Image (tube, rainbow, N blue to C red; front, side, top):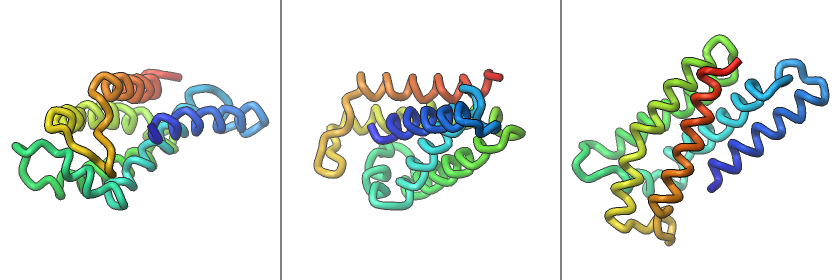
Length: 147
């Protein structure tokens, strides 16, 4: 839920700043870029911080080197978050992050099928997780295709 809050709150605050005169944030497209950047910065940091063990546990057992996979995806999320902040790279970054989000979705399916508990709680049910992933991919595609 924290990534969704980061996306929505980040975009809303950036849009408000645009309305208050920050020219670089004047419009929904730049505001959405900021919200996505905040969301992917949050999730990227989790790959190296307190949630790292949980993320490693989510990697499907059939994939090799889960720790390396979590590290690589974390680096990609952080690099993408940074690239979203620059108009020249934002569209490519958003497209890459949309693909990355889709590529990581099987880890959520695997975690739910294996009934993992993360931080003492069951993983997000697959229906709710799917809705969240659709929102994240749609926001990334809106940046990719938007003005």
